[in-house]
Each structure stands twice: as C-alpha cells, then as structure tokens.
Image (cartoon, rainbow over all chains, first blue to last red; front, side):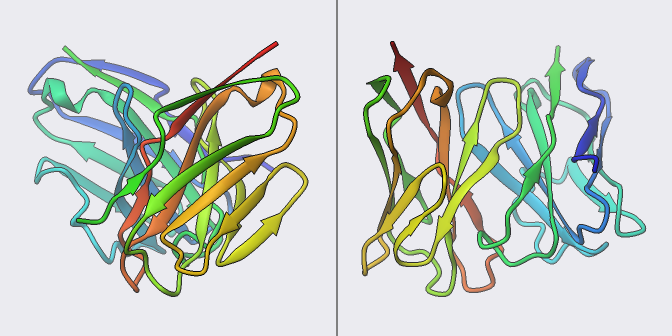
Length: 116
Length: 111
C-alpha cells in the first residue's frame, strides 16, 4: 500500500508569510507525528496526534506553529509569519497506534521549507 | 534535561562490524529503545528496537545493559549501502510524550 506522503515536497516562501504543510498518513494509522530537521541537526519532535487529538503541544517551537488533524487522517502543520530560522525539512510519520518509541513509525519524504 | 548522546560520525570499511552507542540517562522505565536509519533526502526508517538485553534481526543487533542508560546498535559486515545516518529514539517520560531522537551518527563505509 501507499506510504506516508507529504506536500509540497519543496516550499520557498518570504519571511513573514504563512505556510501550510500537509501530511497524508498510511491508511488505518491512528497516530501521526511531526518532526523538524534543520541542516546538520537531528530530528526535533514537534507534536503527535492520537486520532484527531494532540495531547501535548509543548514541543511546538513557538505560538507561530500550529497543527491539526481531521477525520483521523490528513494533518496540516501551519507556520504563521515565517522566519528564516524556520527553514528546515519538516517530516511527518505515522504508526498504527501511539505507544511511544515502541511503535514503529513510518516516515514520509519530508517537506523542505526555505524562508528567504 | 532529557538528552541522548551519540558520536557525530564514524568511518568503516566494507565487511567490518560497526557498533554505534547512544547514551540516554533518564529514559522512561517502561519504554523501548528504537533505532532508525536515514538516507539523504529520505525520511528515517525503522531498523530495530529492544527493551533490555539483546535483540537481533536480519539487519542488526541491539545491546541494552541492565541499567538501560545506553544502547549499542551493531551492524555486522557493513557494506557501502549502509552509509547513512543512524538515530536512537527514546522517551523521557512515562507517558511517552517526550520523544527524543539523538542527533544521529553519520556512518561512512568505504571500499
């Protein structure tokens, strides 16, 4: 079956603009995760969803970042008033359920965001 | 502060065994330790996971001491295609909501 897909694959925007990044998880996966990977850095955990609910939003870098998930499927990560330090690869992953590291996550290819 | 530590990079030759250690001092007592592999321009993919002692699958082994303050990924007889970044993933709270990936170890395999 299809894996996790993300769109757009690349996004160039101007500082101050808002951007929306989309993630389509594997069908039937109830858990969905967002990570940020800056150049030369590891993966920074942002947020996860169980169904449509995000139990812990403390990983979001600032209040300019928000995420939602509808219908237990597609998720969007929105960055308002983008800054140059937001430039990174944003990765989405999904898993059958949320059980922490025990649950295998399947990652999408990422969205490369460049803020000029 | 929850943190994991891995070597930044490692070099190896084809056919050698490679061991990558991740230190994680205060991980959740009820959670697994998982390792992922990432190739350039791709998302990470699962390699192996364990809770304690030793786990082996078709691609790797994972050694976890009794105190669970570290874990070692062992890749037997590496090939050029094993050149990638390797991450350990742990949780630092019992709810498992603080997922921490290490900064990753870049493994370069040469012929």
